[in-house]
Image (cartoon, rainbow, N blue to C red; front, side, top):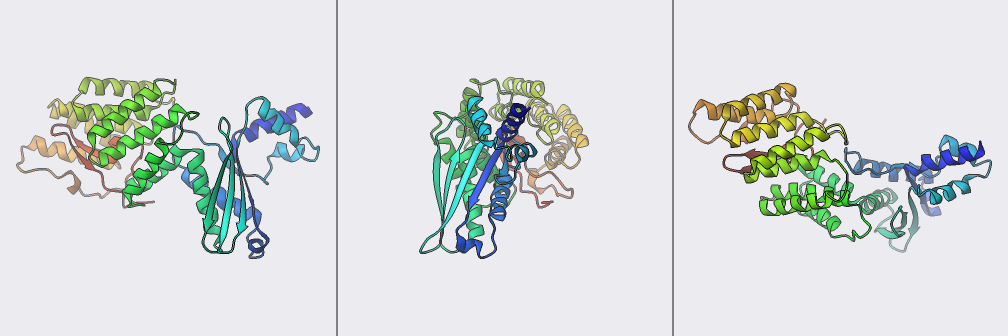
Length: 367
């Protein structure tokens, strides 16, 4: 019974990111408790990792908040055995140990990250004044950027595409920094995911050749794994349509369909599959089929702005009206999903005949 108790605690804690924060007496005297500091820290991490993603990150948990099993085991002095079992069965969770120190000019946070398969990583963050909350937040963001570079880069890209952040240079730097990090012990799936969103940003920058190279590298990285990530296939279909490789685009859509439901659900997945099928028909000059497919996507989700724009665009082309159609002129009268940052078909509009790309404006409906 005791061994089962300890083993249960080891397994439960192996799926969490344990966070502990030590505070200097001067900061505690202001009313900020250790428990509150840890809650601020994990809340900031949770904000970064909230987006659905194929790259899993352990759930952040305050170190002082015990699990039910842990609460029973601690009085019996069995908690030391938990760590031993985790080492034995390679169930090491992520541990973030942070200590805030007061300096002559402000505050400094010393952080030590322990993560399975990687060396201990000491980090240091500073605050020029005594704003402990600001230091906790910046330290939490810096820590999760080191623990999961992809989740941090995805967070930054999502903020940019949805209009919460305007500095594209900083977003590009966040992605590039993660890609140029030491990946000798890194996860090839995480590297592939980074290349995937880097390719999307390259298209936003109108650098099609770079996007194509990055998608090739994505497939090279993911080929060494058995991970069925649908977002890669969907973006490959978009790139194939953009470059005129329509049979290749069809094949990638077929792959995405067969993998549907085997990975983290993508919001509006079926609608974006329909949209990309419609783009292929349009590229082949079959406007009737393209419109029918896009109308089916619109019926499936009337709030999807991309589907609404493509339907209006194709109706304009079928009508024989003269003049250039401006896809961004279609009024946005419906609440729509925020841009899905992993999907090119969500963030971008494509004229498959001229191969011109338009960036879908950020949603003004941020509910």
